[in-house]
Image (cartoon, rainbow, N blue to C red):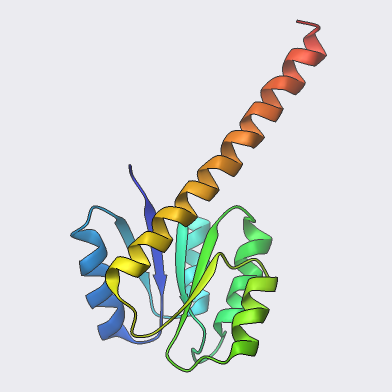
Length: 142
């Protein structure tokens, strides 16, 4: 399994540390220190799961989440915050976040969420592929 994870958080030490832990477990990790940098990275190539901090200077996590979902609704986003409120969590989930975790979180909990998010994205992509194949078959009368 080649899961591509994008970490977006303004705390560089946190991003480096978490990125190293995820890479040591076989994930392909890209690291960005702002919402704008994360969005730019998404334009460069495919990502399966985004780990997104809620509170960042400039473009916050909620606005970044909105833009991620506009760019590609199938990308799963796990919101992460050390300063969270229940309202922010609810807003993120309403906007399409896969899940929400408080910092600090256990690496094993985060990995479980990443794997479930990746599985959901893969299932959605497979349903879309099947629908496209069915449409082609029906159009050709097979």
